Image (cartoon, rainbow, N blue to C red; front, side, top):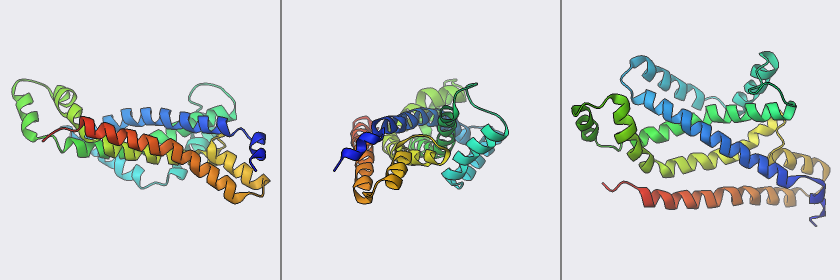
Length: 222
């Protein structure tokens, strides 16, 4: 029943999916944190940029962003994010970029919700003893915001893992692309769909359970 799997590099595709998810998650956490800092910052221009970025990017389909990264940045402007590599390697980098730019908007909002749980008095007290806005944010607000945002961030990460399937649109050999090839060549639609579904359950369910447990452990007691 499963003999046909030997003809496809499913393990390699799953590994590519994991790499996409991990690299995009790291990039999204960094850029999303910067955006959240902009949105709560004292500089109107930066607040406006953060707000506009989040509202615009969240309302653009991820497929459009991924296709723009490949067709617009690479094929039109010649940007390869690394200066070389074959077609699949370049598109892998661009897929990571697209996923990062898209997911960071949701990370920003999850962190901003965590920032809103921090009592205003703590920030005011920190400013009263002479700390700058950046110091207040880094030493007082963000540590508590991250602890309050673990569960929302876990939901964003789970969505990111599933969103990696969009990278198949630009030829990245991740799980969804291999699934498409198997469905086109094999007459076992239900079995193939069940296998791919199981792969994503294995990737997302433990992640959600673990981060949910972490969220309970580090939650700020109010």
